[in-house]
Image (cartoon, rainbow, N blue to C red; front, side):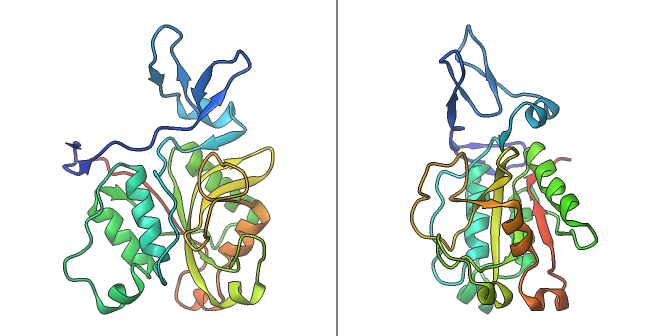
Length: 239
């Protein structure tokens, strides 16, 4: 374990998934490797954005566990910290609601990530139209930033979507990548159990753009508490 420039404890993170090029060589998605040395070379962001239909942030969690109880916020935070190789330190004296529900408010998520040395500004996409919202999410992925979304949870299983549940159940998920050609996003949804039917480049489920927009509208009460179309792009704090 080492200590980074911000003083946060860091531990080895997950290696990027490998894919096979046309010449048979293997490389990590979104990066190039030196032919003479086994060395990963980070691409420029514009290369990363425009040369890969499947675009995944370079730092991924080591696992995508199923949440215990109503603790989706905490599980998303733990996964993000794991991706950035930062050890999670819960507050010594959490509020009563945090003891019961974990990090249930968006302010809890912001405070916890900021306390671990990450930028996690709470933002709203309320004034944007749908295509701009999707472009915004892809842009953060292109900039190597996973994005936590406050959503309505209609996905009570991997195979069924319940509109009524989505209208009343608040939830958090994290986007770690997208496939531009197939118009899907790679998402960590801690409510889901088990593994996806097919291996994914990131996350534990893929959601179409239409599903992302539908979920991001949130339950009906989000608009009354300032959580409609809330998102938190995550990056390492600088300065």
